[in-house]
Image (tube, rainbow, N blue to C red):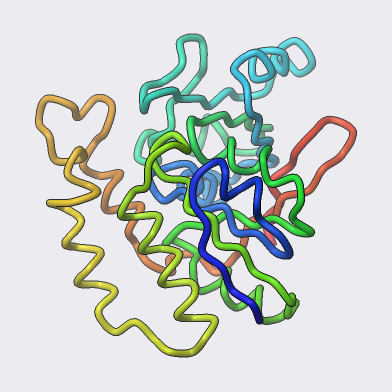
Length: 228
């Protein structure tokens, strides 16, 4: 298996074979929690315009969107896992747009298959990749808004690669906790808890919490996140 670690929007455009689009803080951790809380369907979209166009097609859909970390005005929810209320999203169609993760999906046009990547289902993702045994695997670290590398996405790519190669990563939990003063420090800023609540940090580094993967499909309405 040829495993490459790629970076940012350009990396998504270069992805081949089976692509894992990684966004730990917080898009694809968020989608795992949404499915775990009973969302019927999640549709990742690239633009704000497309997000709001869905409300005209489906007045009951639930809009989740952020730009620069903040909730998009007019959306029902921002990109914060700890803000999910199961009774609000259970059984509903979710429209999801973010600054990094969903942009990676729409730019990975050359990939044969797309999975989302995060720590909360990393082992399940690696197990799934081994089961389909692709010749090429592209681990795409989306970083900050798809423009600058981030510690958490790079670490997640290293972790998934270690699971695929069988080399192991015994220091992973220590490195995850160390991000409190590194890539996750913004979650511990008391002046910024409305945008980056501390609880989101712990939810996003809860390694291998879920035993399912999220695979991206396309249909007549666009992209669709499918729980496997």
